[in-house]
Length: 316
Figure 1 (cartoon, rainbow, N blue to C red):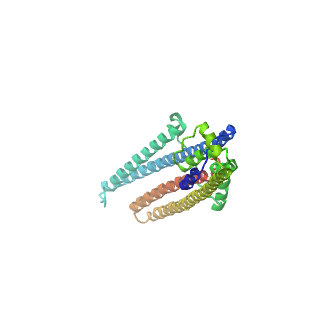
Figure 2: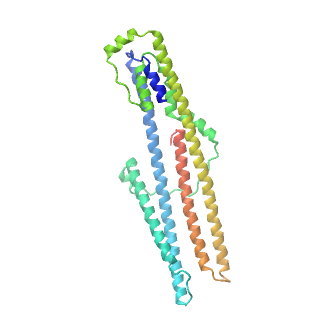
Figure 3: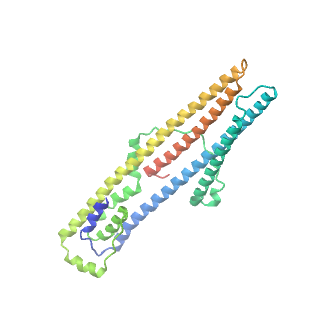
Protein backbone atom coordinates (compact mmCIF):
# COMPACT_ATOMS: atom_id res chain seq x y z
CA UNK A 1 0.00 0.00 0.00
CA UNK A 2 2.92 2.37 0.67
CA UNK A 3 4.32 1.61 -2.78
CA UNK A 4 0.92 2.14 -4.38
CA UNK A 5 0.51 5.49 -2.62
CA UNK A 6 4.01 6.52 -3.64
CA UNK A 7 3.19 5.74 -7.26
CA UNK A 8 0.00 7.81 -7.03
CA UNK A 9 1.87 10.81 -5.66
CA UNK A 10 4.56 10.56 -8.33
CA UNK A 11 2.01 11.68 -10.90
CA UNK A 12 1.12 15.37 -11.34
CA UNK A 13 -1.27 16.32 -8.60
CA UNK A 14 -0.77 20.04 -8.14
CA UNK A 15 -4.11 21.77 -8.02
CA UNK A 16 -5.84 24.89 -6.86
CA UNK A 17 -9.00 24.13 -4.92
CA UNK A 18 -12.00 25.77 -6.55
CA UNK A 19 -14.11 24.77 -3.57
CA UNK A 20 -12.32 24.96 -0.21
CA UNK A 21 -15.43 23.53 1.47
CA UNK A 22 -14.96 20.33 -0.52
CA UNK A 23 -11.46 19.94 0.86
CA UNK A 24 -12.70 20.60 4.37
CA UNK A 25 -15.50 18.05 4.03
CA UNK A 26 -13.05 15.36 2.91
CA UNK A 27 -10.67 16.08 5.78
CA UNK A 28 -13.48 16.33 8.33
CA UNK A 29 -14.86 12.97 7.21
CA UNK A 30 -11.52 11.28 7.84
CA UNK A 31 -11.00 13.16 11.10
CA UNK A 32 -14.44 12.11 12.31
CA UNK A 33 -13.78 8.48 11.39
CA UNK A 34 -10.43 8.50 13.18
CA UNK A 35 -11.92 10.20 16.27
CA UNK A 36 -14.84 7.77 16.37
CA UNK A 37 -12.49 4.78 16.09
CA UNK A 38 -10.29 6.18 18.88
CA UNK A 39 -13.35 6.56 21.12
CA UNK A 40 -14.34 2.97 20.38
CA UNK A 41 -10.83 1.76 21.20
CA UNK A 42 -10.79 3.73 24.45
CA UNK A 43 -14.19 2.28 25.41
CA UNK A 44 -12.97 -1.23 24.61
CA UNK A 45 -9.84 -0.73 26.72
CA UNK A 46 -11.93 0.57 29.62
CA UNK A 47 -14.21 -2.48 29.43
CA UNK A 48 -11.22 -4.84 29.37
CA UNK A 49 -9.85 -3.17 32.49
CA UNK A 50 -13.30 -3.35 34.08
CA UNK A 51 -13.54 -7.11 33.60
CA UNK A 52 -9.92 -7.55 34.66
CA UNK A 53 -10.67 -5.83 37.97
CA UNK A 54 -13.85 -7.88 38.39
CA UNK A 55 -11.86 -11.09 37.87
CA UNK A 56 -9.22 -9.95 40.37
CA UNK A 57 -11.84 -9.24 43.02
CA UNK A 58 -13.43 -12.64 42.44
CA UNK A 59 -9.99 -14.22 42.85
CA UNK A 60 -9.67 -12.41 46.20
CA UNK A 61 -12.71 -14.31 47.46
CA UNK A 62 -11.13 -17.61 46.39
CA UNK A 63 -7.93 -16.64 48.23
CA UNK A 64 -10.00 -16.05 51.38
CA UNK A 65 -11.68 -19.43 50.96
CA UNK A 66 -8.30 -21.11 50.45
CA UNK A 67 -6.84 -19.37 53.49
CA UNK A 68 -9.77 -20.59 55.60
CA UNK A 69 -9.24 -24.15 54.32
CA UNK A 70 -5.53 -24.02 55.23
CA UNK A 71 -6.37 -22.78 58.71
CA UNK A 72 -8.78 -25.66 59.18
CA UNK A 73 -6.15 -28.15 58.00
CA UNK A 74 -3.54 -26.62 60.29
CA UNK A 75 -5.90 -26.96 63.24
CA UNK A 76 -6.69 -30.58 62.33
CA UNK A 77 -2.97 -31.37 62.12
CA UNK A 78 -2.34 -29.90 65.57
CA UNK A 79 -5.09 -32.04 67.03
CA UNK A 80 -3.60 -35.15 65.45
CA UNK A 81 -0.14 -34.32 66.81
CA UNK A 82 -1.59 -33.82 70.29
CA UNK A 83 -3.13 -37.30 70.03
CA UNK A 84 0.25 -38.73 69.11
CA UNK A 85 -0.62 -39.42 65.47
CA UNK A 86 2.35 -38.67 63.18
CA UNK A 87 1.98 -36.33 60.20
CA UNK A 88 3.66 -37.36 56.94
CA UNK A 89 4.55 -33.77 55.99
CA UNK A 90 3.98 -31.36 58.90
CA UNK A 91 5.35 -28.40 56.90
CA UNK A 92 3.01 -28.84 53.91
CA UNK A 93 0.40 -26.34 55.14
CA UNK A 94 3.08 -23.77 55.93
CA UNK A 95 4.49 -24.06 52.39
CA UNK A 96 1.03 -23.76 50.89
CA UNK A 97 0.36 -20.65 52.98
CA UNK A 98 3.53 -19.05 51.62
CA UNK A 99 2.49 -19.87 48.06
CA UNK A 100 -0.99 -18.49 48.74
CA UNK A 101 0.43 -15.25 50.15
CA UNK A 102 2.66 -14.86 47.09
CA UNK A 103 -0.31 -15.34 44.74
CA UNK A 104 -2.39 -12.95 46.82
CA UNK A 105 0.27 -10.23 46.59
CA UNK A 106 0.49 -10.75 42.83
CA UNK A 107 -3.27 -10.49 42.42
CA UNK A 108 -3.47 -7.40 44.64
CA UNK A 109 -0.78 -5.74 42.52
CA UNK A 110 -2.62 -6.61 39.29
CA UNK A 111 -5.81 -4.99 40.59
CA UNK A 112 -3.88 -1.84 41.56
CA UNK A 113 -2.23 -1.65 38.11
CA UNK A 114 -5.56 -2.17 36.32
CA UNK A 115 -7.15 0.62 38.37
CA UNK A 116 -4.20 2.89 37.62
CA UNK A 117 -4.62 2.23 33.88
CA UNK A 118 -8.38 2.74 34.16
CA UNK A 119 -7.84 6.12 35.84
CA UNK A 120 -6.32 7.40 32.59
CA UNK A 121 -9.65 6.72 30.88
CA UNK A 122 -12.31 7.55 33.48
CA UNK A 123 -10.42 9.64 36.03
CA UNK A 124 -8.75 8.74 39.33
CA UNK A 125 -11.84 9.65 41.35
CA UNK A 126 -13.82 6.94 39.52
CA UNK A 127 -11.12 4.30 39.03
CA UNK A 128 -9.64 4.09 42.54
CA UNK A 129 -12.82 2.76 44.12
CA UNK A 130 -14.03 0.85 41.08
CA UNK A 131 -15.17 -2.54 42.41
CA UNK A 132 -17.37 -4.20 39.78
CA UNK A 133 -19.41 -7.27 40.56
CA UNK A 134 -20.27 -9.24 37.44
CA UNK A 135 -22.24 -12.45 36.96
CA UNK A 136 -19.90 -15.44 36.94
CA UNK A 137 -21.83 -17.07 34.11
CA UNK A 138 -21.19 -16.37 30.43
CA UNK A 139 -23.48 -16.78 27.43
CA UNK A 140 -21.59 -18.33 24.48
CA UNK A 141 -22.39 -16.76 21.12
CA UNK A 142 -24.54 -18.72 18.66
CA UNK A 143 -23.73 -16.36 15.80
CA UNK A 144 -21.73 -17.56 12.82
CA UNK A 145 -18.39 -15.85 12.24
CA UNK A 146 -19.40 -15.02 8.66
CA UNK A 147 -22.38 -13.07 10.00
CA UNK A 148 -20.02 -11.10 12.25
CA UNK A 149 -17.72 -10.33 9.31
CA UNK A 150 -20.65 -9.15 7.20
CA UNK A 151 -21.79 -6.95 10.07
CA UNK A 152 -18.29 -5.49 10.43
CA UNK A 153 -18.10 -4.57 6.76
CA UNK A 154 -21.28 -2.52 7.24
CA UNK A 155 -20.31 -1.01 10.61
CA UNK A 156 -16.63 -0.11 10.42
CA UNK A 157 -16.47 3.66 10.10
CA UNK A 158 -13.00 3.65 8.50
CA UNK A 159 -14.12 1.35 5.68
CA UNK A 160 -17.40 3.18 5.17
CA UNK A 161 -15.63 6.54 5.00
CA UNK A 162 -13.18 5.36 2.33
CA UNK A 163 -15.96 3.89 0.21
CA UNK A 164 -18.13 6.98 0.56
CA UNK A 165 -15.39 9.43 -0.40
CA UNK A 166 -14.15 7.62 -3.50
CA UNK A 167 -16.27 9.89 -5.67
CA UNK A 168 -14.54 13.00 -4.30
CA UNK A 169 -11.27 12.20 -6.10
CA UNK A 170 -11.02 14.70 -8.97
CA UNK A 171 -8.69 17.31 -10.43
CA UNK A 172 -9.49 19.81 -7.69
CA UNK A 173 -8.93 17.41 -4.77
CA UNK A 174 -5.80 15.51 -5.76
CA UNK A 175 -3.61 17.49 -3.37
CA UNK A 176 -5.73 16.76 -0.32
CA UNK A 177 -5.91 13.12 -1.32
CA UNK A 178 -2.11 13.07 -1.50
CA UNK A 179 -2.07 14.16 2.13
CA UNK A 180 -4.66 11.57 3.10
CA UNK A 181 -2.74 8.90 1.20
CA UNK A 182 0.43 9.77 3.08
CA UNK A 183 -1.44 9.63 6.41
CA UNK A 184 -3.06 6.26 5.73
CA UNK A 185 0.20 4.83 4.39
CA UNK A 186 2.19 6.10 7.37
CA UNK A 187 4.67 8.16 5.37
CA UNK A 188 5.48 11.90 5.63
CA UNK A 189 3.22 14.17 3.61
CA UNK A 190 4.79 16.39 0.98
CA UNK A 191 4.76 20.13 1.57
CA UNK A 192 2.07 22.04 -0.31
CA UNK A 193 3.11 24.14 -3.28
CA UNK A 194 2.50 27.85 -3.25
CA UNK A 195 -0.73 28.89 -4.96
CA UNK A 196 1.11 30.94 -7.63
CA UNK A 197 3.25 28.00 -8.72
CA UNK A 198 0.25 25.68 -8.51
CA UNK A 199 -1.65 27.87 -10.97
CA UNK A 200 1.38 28.12 -13.25
CA UNK A 201 2.03 24.37 -13.34
CA UNK A 202 -1.64 23.56 -13.62
CA UNK A 203 -1.95 25.44 -16.88
CA UNK A 204 0.87 23.36 -18.33
CA UNK A 205 -0.72 20.03 -17.51
CA UNK A 206 -2.88 18.43 -20.14
CA UNK A 207 -6.16 16.69 -19.46
CA UNK A 208 -4.68 13.24 -20.07
CA UNK A 209 -2.19 13.67 -17.22
CA UNK A 210 -4.93 14.84 -14.89
CA UNK A 211 -7.19 11.92 -15.75
CA UNK A 212 -4.30 9.51 -15.31
CA UNK A 213 -3.53 10.95 -11.89
CA UNK A 214 -7.20 10.69 -10.86
CA UNK A 215 -7.44 7.09 -12.09
CA UNK A 216 -4.23 6.13 -10.28
CA UNK A 217 -5.42 7.66 -7.01
CA UNK A 218 -8.80 5.93 -7.31
CA UNK A 219 -7.05 2.63 -7.99
CA UNK A 220 -4.96 3.20 -4.86
CA UNK A 221 -8.12 3.80 -2.81
CA UNK A 222 -9.74 0.68 -4.23
CA UNK A 223 -6.65 -1.31 -3.23
CA UNK A 224 -6.75 0.24 0.23
CA UNK A 225 -10.44 -0.65 0.64
CA UNK A 226 -9.71 -4.21 -0.46
CA UNK A 227 -6.78 -4.51 1.94
CA UNK A 228 -8.73 -2.99 4.84
CA UNK A 229 -11.62 -5.37 4.12
CA UNK A 230 -9.26 -8.35 4.43
CA UNK A 231 -7.77 -6.93 7.61
CA UNK A 232 -11.19 -6.38 9.19
CA UNK A 233 -12.28 -9.91 8.27
CA UNK A 234 -9.10 -11.28 9.87
CA UNK A 235 -9.61 -9.21 13.05
CA UNK A 236 -13.17 -10.48 13.40
CA UNK A 237 -12.16 -14.07 12.68
CA UNK A 238 -9.33 -14.02 15.25
CA UNK A 239 -11.48 -12.40 17.94
CA UNK A 240 -14.34 -14.82 17.27
CA UNK A 241 -11.99 -17.82 17.58
CA UNK A 242 -10.58 -16.48 20.87
CA UNK A 243 -14.09 -16.00 22.21
CA UNK A 244 -15.25 -19.43 21.04
CA UNK A 245 -12.25 -21.19 22.54
CA UNK A 246 -12.52 -19.28 25.82
CA UNK A 247 -16.17 -20.33 26.10
CA UNK A 248 -15.32 -24.00 25.53
CA UNK A 249 -12.46 -23.87 28.04
CA UNK A 250 -14.71 -22.12 30.57
CA UNK A 251 -17.20 -24.97 30.26
CA UNK A 252 -14.42 -27.52 30.78
CA UNK A 253 -13.12 -25.84 33.93
CA UNK A 254 -16.68 -25.69 35.24
CA UNK A 255 -16.97 -29.42 34.69
CA UNK A 256 -13.69 -29.88 36.54
CA UNK A 257 -15.03 -27.94 39.54
CA UNK A 258 -18.16 -30.12 39.55
CA UNK A 259 -15.99 -33.22 39.31
CA UNK A 260 -13.99 -32.25 42.38
CA UNK A 261 -17.13 -31.36 44.31
CA UNK A 262 -18.44 -34.84 43.59
CA UNK A 263 -15.14 -36.32 44.74
CA UNK A 264 -15.30 -34.34 48.00
CA UNK A 265 -18.78 -35.71 48.73
CA UNK A 266 -17.53 -39.24 48.07
CA UNK A 267 -14.60 -38.77 50.45
CA UNK A 268 -16.84 -37.31 53.15
CA UNK A 269 -19.05 -40.42 52.99
CA UNK A 270 -15.99 -42.71 53.07
CA UNK A 271 -14.66 -40.86 56.12
CA UNK A 272 -17.42 -42.49 58.17
CA UNK A 273 -15.68 -45.85 57.83
CA UNK A 274 -12.05 -44.78 57.31
CA UNK A 275 -10.04 -41.65 57.95
CA UNK A 276 -9.23 -39.66 54.82
CA UNK A 277 -8.78 -36.06 55.97
CA UNK A 278 -5.64 -35.68 53.86
CA UNK A 279 -7.48 -36.81 50.72
CA UNK A 280 -10.35 -34.44 51.49
CA UNK A 281 -7.92 -31.58 51.97
CA UNK A 282 -6.22 -32.33 48.66
CA UNK A 283 -9.55 -32.58 46.83
CA UNK A 284 -10.72 -29.26 48.27
CA UNK A 285 -7.49 -27.57 47.21
CA UNK A 286 -7.91 -28.96 43.70
CA UNK A 287 -11.47 -27.67 43.57
CA UNK A 288 -10.29 -24.17 44.51
CA UNK A 289 -7.56 -24.36 41.88
CA UNK A 290 -10.18 -25.32 39.27
CA UNK A 291 -12.28 -22.34 40.39
CA UNK A 292 -9.28 -20.08 39.78
CA UNK A 293 -8.92 -21.47 36.27
CA UNK A 294 -12.62 -20.81 35.70
CA UNK A 295 -12.07 -17.14 36.53
CA UNK A 296 -9.19 -17.00 34.02
CA UNK A 297 -11.39 -18.45 31.27
CA UNK A 298 -14.20 -16.09 32.27
CA UNK A 299 -12.09 -12.94 31.83
CA UNK A 300 -10.55 -14.34 28.64
CA UNK A 301 -14.04 -14.75 27.19
CA UNK A 302 -15.11 -11.22 28.14
CA UNK A 303 -11.95 -9.66 26.73
CA UNK A 304 -12.29 -11.67 23.51
CA UNK A 305 -15.92 -10.56 23.29
CA UNK A 306 -14.84 -6.92 23.61
CA UNK A 307 -12.18 -7.43 20.92
CA UNK A 308 -14.85 -8.93 18.69
CA UNK A 309 -17.18 -5.96 19.21
CA UNK A 310 -14.31 -3.57 18.48
CA UNK A 311 -13.39 -5.48 15.33
CA UNK A 312 -17.02 -5.36 14.18
CA UNK A 313 -17.07 -1.62 14.85
CA UNK A 314 -20.65 -1.14 16.02
CA UNK A 315 -21.36 0.81 19.20
CA UNK A 316 -19.79 -0.83 22.27
